Image (cartoon, rainbow over all chains, first blue to last red; front, side, top):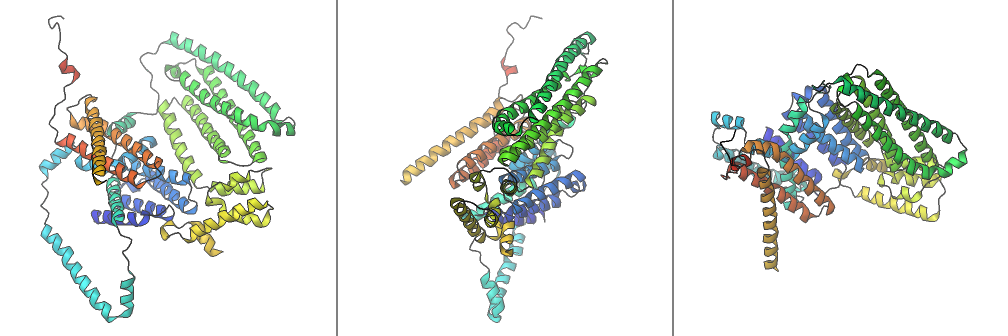
Length: 464
Length: 110
């Protein structure tokens, strides 16, 4: 049963992907993968986390059908590794899931069948496999096949409708490369059906807890000195950031025209520096609260100063977000500017998790686990948005100015919208021609898509 | 022309085989317990095969998904698995470790 399922999955894999571009096929592959994993790991699928990861994987597959972007393909791939890695060890961290998922996909079959482990040797000694009856297998495959073909030939003569159906079956798509692709599909599904783990890494991860432990090197005089250094350092940094924020508010509330003219230079040089400062801020806090200082009774002032600094850094993030949104309003939405916003969300999560780490005596692994999990959620969530469409829509309808060539060079996800804009916006002749060319090429591509390559835009086009 | 192709194939295949064989041997040489095959397999093989796969996929993408590159790196992948299989199951060679090659120069000293 299991082998038959893998065999069918391999044939479907080749049918989906051989000589096809990405579209509906990746979503169908996602469903097929979840089905194969479910057949072989039914008990794991009762786990809530497994269900969530499966849903995330299917959602990323569906987003590729709706808008086939590089981001959604990357998210689908990461979700695939996460799900498989999670099935190999449900209690491990997400980054270990990625490692296990990648390892299973590459060498699961080899690890299970050719690896030399003690348990396997013992199993081999105890269990003697019954010999395969090749003659029986030949009988149950060849005899029914021959009889079936004979009867098909007979029935074809007796009924023209049946004859037409039989003649319409075309296996012309099968060739050497198609078979090779099916072989790779079989290898892939054989690898993933029973996920395996990278043992040393998984073991270390399972042993590593989230909480900090007091070490034997606990020395009060030493900690007192460290505490003093921390208090002075973070007090000065607090004073500096307060001064910076006051000047920043003064700058932001200054004359509008002046701001618009200097925004370009400000945002490009300023935001990068501020982004760096937030990373350094987190690193300084991690260094100060790395060990026994967390258990020092007189650390209350230091902790309060650290919380204040984190909150002030969050205010800095809000200030950068405000500047970035002003920049977007004046000069339009671009991927880089969206990237800054995504980074700011991640930085806020990083700052909040650092605060939690300090307040509840957690170690750096806790921080790493929480933040990688957050990055995964943001990746999956951001892959569900058709960014090209929203960038085009915003720049055409809300931004004060826009770069037409930038919009034109985006993927085909904005082509239908660009064509719609022709009716309501006045553009120069060259731009109109460019849009018409892009639209015609895209419509031709959609019309020539095979069923495996279908996209949501195909249905939109047919509906029109 | 055919002779040139055969020579190129043999040369390319030979270099690839040598490189894979050498890199896998390195995994054993640099292992803490080179004669403990399950240990080497558990600690080195996953990282080796993940690294090899990552390099292969990067080069396939860099070559704009050329058919030749795809076939070549698929072959490299399976060849590396075959060499690992040979090393784990059939290779009788014993590696000398640092601990048993160093002899005490003055064994009577405390």
